[in-house]
Amino acid sequence: MTEHAVVIVGGGPAGMMLAAELALAKVDVAIVERRAGQDIDGSRSGGLLARTIEVLDQRGVADRFVSEGQVVHVWGDFAGVQMGIGDFPTRHNYVLALWQNHIERILGGWVDELPVTIYREREATGVTQGDTCVEVALSDGRSLRAEYLVGCDGGRSLVRKAAAIEFPGWDASTSFLIAEVEMDGEPEVGMQRDDKGVHAIGPIEGERRFRVVVREEQLGRNGEPTLSDLSEQLVGARGTDYGLRRATWISRFTDMARQAASYRKGRVLLAGDAAHVHSPMGGQGLGTGVQDAVNLGWKLAQVVKQTSPESLLDTYHAERHPVGARVLQLVMALNALSPAGARTEALRETLSEAVSLDGPRRLLAGRLSGLDIRYDLGDGHPLRGRRMPDLDLVTADGPLRVFTLLHEARPVLLNLGEPGGLESGPWADRVPLVDAGYEGEWELPVLGAVSAPAAVLVRPDGHVAWVGEGTGAGLAEALTTWFGPPRAA
Ligand SMILES: Cc1cc2nc3c(=O)[nH]c(=O)nc-3n(C[C@H](O)[C@H](O)[C@H](O)COP(=O)(O)OP(=O)(O)OC[C@H]3O[C@@H](n4cnc5c(N)ncnc54)[C@H](O)[C@@H]3O)c2cc1C
Image 1 (cartoon, helix red, strand yellow):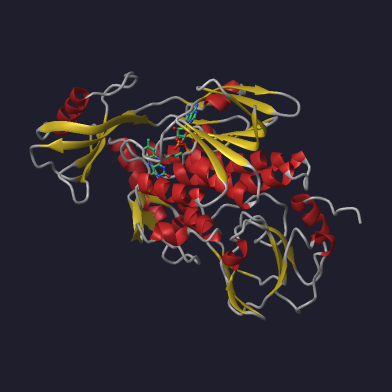
Image 2 (cartoon, rainbow, N blue to C red):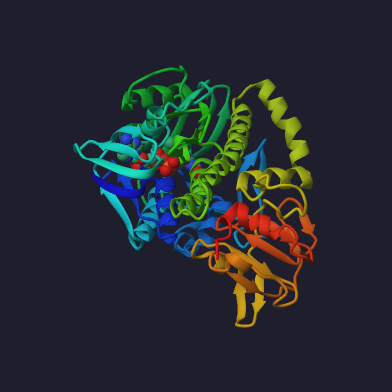
């Protein structure tokens, strides 16, 4: 039986990102993927939000995406108020409009440069967990054995079901058809909110095709939606189907919201849509999965390499489950504000007055962009548990961006005080120490200015694990917690 340290089921955005993280950490990783390549049917995610672009920047690949997408400074709305983060202290204070097929192609291209085995056109059909390994049966009759298996296999995750991980949440209350179509007539493009709900038609750039989203009058229709279903809903919503002729893709999505009760069960872990599903409103899905992968990858690598105990993996659930729960809450709030009708209108208008104020706008924009994420790593300096800003540092070797120090998915101990004033001691081989200076202000999204630390311990995912305020107090404990106990001499 073929063995790998880690097997990932599903080579979508979450699976690809996780494979890259593990490969960068020099872990033997394989992906099992049903599709022959990275092509997807139709358009799904329409872009990347700020924190997702930042995590790609931490690995030095953000430019590959930014150069193919379109920078949008004001995007979406909350209760009718346009959201923008132009004033946030990040290099990526925007949304990058880029369809998911391009995101996946670029991610796939990066993964192809790394030592990752991909078993394509094969499905995982079963999972058996033992004390020391986990086996996954494939549709070609073969099996793979691994120390850990990660289900990145989407909302209908076989891995989640096989591991008997519960998926509690809320059933759908409304459903939509989404399609890419050809029409003989000239449809009225744009978003419309009427007493039937929200519908949108937009041109597909450079083509005579349109992207259509229309609410279904009836909930609970099963089976693949057809061209006549789409026509019926369009006529119901707009009085005409605009000479609907052909659809190259029709799909259905709902406002169902569910989250895995546990992101880990023994040697099985979940990431991406396998761990959380919700409606596409707010554009949260893809980025949350990519960020799950960035939280999990280095931890899994350290456990596989036996530098950290397996209890480190429990911090994955402890950190990412609350983030997923907040995403579900945000998306459900957006859904609740979407239906037409006097009561929702009253709620929207009341809320929009509050959200127009700067404080609430920053709060919500921080949440939508993912820049407000804080893992509960204890009290103290506000940086602790939050993302490390991508500062322009000065070092003995010249200028250096913080994110450059994270390109290899390794941690860094940044001494911003007296050069030579801090040591990583027995962790020196695992945690590089960099002496650097920084002259500017320390500013965090949403929070604003914070006091300048004398040193920071930054985890490979870019979150600050320890803040030094002039002494090394607490550093050894933080190094042990996150990067394993010191090795015996
Ligand atoms: C209409 C629509 C609009 C959306 N808009 C947005 C948006 O604007 N912004 C946003 O961030 N997100 C959006 N999303 C959500 C986004 O598409 C998903 O969150 C994202 O694709 C999840 O990535 P993933 O890797 O977790 O799962 P998936 O993309 O579902 O990937 C799972 C992979 O696993 C493979 N697989 C599944 N089962 C098996 C098996 N048994 N064996 C082998 N392979 C298997 C599949 O082929 C697939 O490649 C939208 C989704 C939809 C449907």
